[in-house]
Image (cartoon, rainbow, N blue to C red; front, side, top):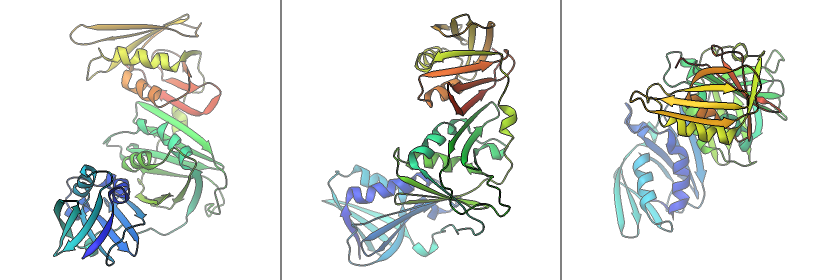
Length: 376
């Protein structure tokens, strides 16, 4: 049966959108597949790893009949990528095998029944609805996601806190060594206030969900709809629906981590500091990644050394006239924040060499980055 006949790009774009969550190796083989379901001219694609589910659809899929089947997501994607941009592609189902035809190319792929595909059940309960633009939410994630922990035993740190408080949406991520905070104003948040009448609600998004959203969201003013439930969160934008489980845990009180009283503040050009950090990082110890910062009136020196007794030193002009400071930091933590901030000027506030530093943007109280010092 001819299931689908269409242009290569019509099939590849939605396949790329859903296949990012597909694992190459899985204990359940069908989870390496993508579900293709054709109804008339509409083709729906669905992928899941049990924790996250992404669905999208496309039109213009002609063919003899309707049907559904699952096929290896990565293999189909790699085949389509390798074909010419203007290729006409046909997917033909015969005896539990799918033949992909394009010009004189033929590929026969194994399939598994669509009825066996483990689609996520949509949870029920009180729903909180938010409406923002894709650009706004993507910017919120970009300012914070790099501070998430990776495989920490404190599982609630392997994700990102999303907090709705009145007319504000906040995102917070921390791995115990640094913390990134960003917020944005909300417009109309619909009719979804919690039962007690308060507007405050917080959930923890899994790391993989945050990474997928960062990949899929467009840098545009197109709308993004968010629905928050007790154990699940849903995102709808364009033709994409993403459903994710939430991390069941209590996120640390981030407000206690952000220093409020700072004796000294230095103002520095972000691009200048970033380039100096990149050069100094070349000679850091690969495991240690420490750089030493020496701050004096109008000057900041960045120094690095490694086990081979190689050394690097950078010096830049800064706006500073406070106490001298000699302190060490993990250069990766500093590069993360500098690479994910677009503003020209950064303010760095501190008390002493043993307390955490606070990086902010002048005139912007919606972004804060806290980083702990390290011994060099």
